[in-house]
Length: 188
Image (cartoon, rainbow, N blue to C red; front, top):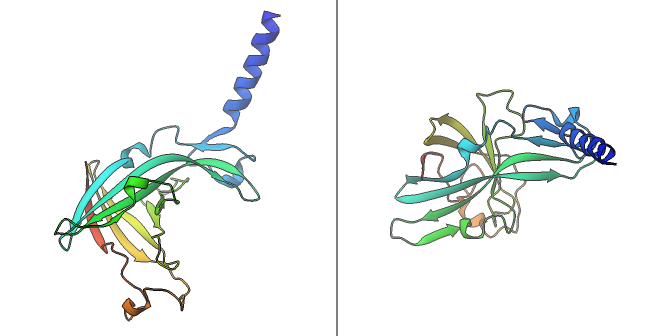
């Protein structure tokens, strides 16, 4: 009986481990409900609280590694970086604080990606809340361990005629989302 239990336990363990794949695995190369896992802890260097300043404001960006479920026609799990921000004006007034409720409404930042095949290209996607569907990307243009530089770009989007921010739209059809074009952040 003990041998049957050990054999059964071994089969279950091998089956579970066979469902885990490293980050550089394409989702199309895995079975349903498999897990693309950060097995080498490549995301850990991004995790934590980051701080930087621009135009007299202070930006805090908290990044976490989370196990995320993609529930499309080919469902799977993958480790992913999620983030929230806090913006404090020069007079100390908190303009945005999503860190204190991290993830309760869906994170504003996600990414770095499940594929690290191109190690020179790291990107976070930015989904600012209450901004009528405006989105952007944050390319990590430099990373030195305790500092990272981000470059912001808007993604094309549909203009919402009923958006409360339309009075602030610039000549490019974009409105301020309280995030700098370029910023260097230091890990806290």
